[in-house]
Image (cartoon, rainbow, N blue to C red):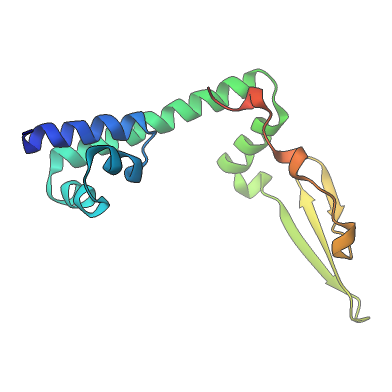
Length: 140
């Protein structure tokens, strides 16, 4: 039978391998999520290890995004700017009411300018292809 220390280490290993997903780690270690969180709240070493894993995962994602930016990926450049300087790059939504009963909406995208929103649901374009990463944008 494994010791508690070994069980916690296995949990940390699977937590890292799963990309920081608590549920997957707990399933692999045969513990409940409440046990994971209890260890995190009561064991400073376990909590520190989880924090280090989380920080390293974020750093990996940041490195991936930076690589995509250097490759000239518009999607990743746009996302980076919006998340790091939202006051400058975040989309704005404006509405006007000319008192005719029709509310006009428009999106102000800092990279492409102002885009009026469609007036009816049937006019809504399928933009998912414009914002979905290509397979080259998805980490391996």
